[in-house]
Image (cartoon, rainbow, N blue to C red; front, side, top):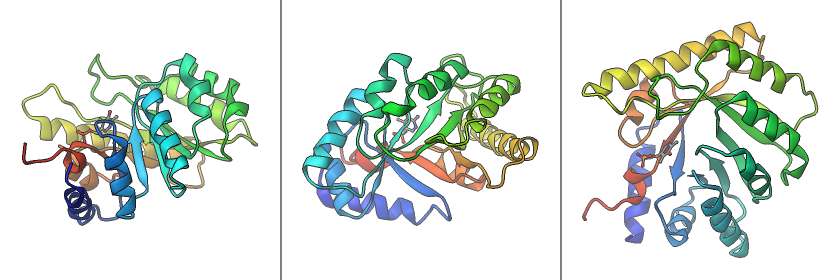
Length: 232
Ligand SMILES: *Cc1c(COP(=O)(O)O)cnc(C)c1O
């Protein structure tokens, strides 16, 4: 992709963000495009496959680009956790979608090469069957209790993630409902678990990030609107 187009897209999107932070989802892009974004002073990137993330993260290390924060945003299989934990500059996992996956992360915690890893629990607010995520408050509460009971853990309970509905004609109304739901769930969990800091909300993609921001998003995850050329 043309270099200044990436920088231009990043600048245009950042103007719309209010207080939310931007995760540039680089999963469609070759590492050269990601480096272009980094050189325009953007440091947070999202990937949804462990192998792709590993390749890009290692290329960044070779180039000495060490300010990068990698966000893992895809469905994570338990047998990939060890590989993921070895990746340099891994900053957060947005997609912890079950108690059993959390248990695996805890079991493998000592393989993690960094000092702190931010954990978001993914909630299936749209209840679409093809989406992952916690479905019940009971399972989510058990996961939170487990994570918070570990006082010296590198894994830090940081927030909640969701995806808006896709399979709907009135996607704006439905997506807004999903985002507002996540906000309500977070505010409720803060009370129930006596949290001192607000939970962060990871929600909003290229097609619905403005709705997510209006509903209180802290992290939007945007890929195609940054990295896919509009002149195709
Ligand atoms: C791909 C992906 C995104 C970004 O999607 P775009 O529509 O390209 O902005 C955001 N979140 C998750 C979980 C993704 O897999």
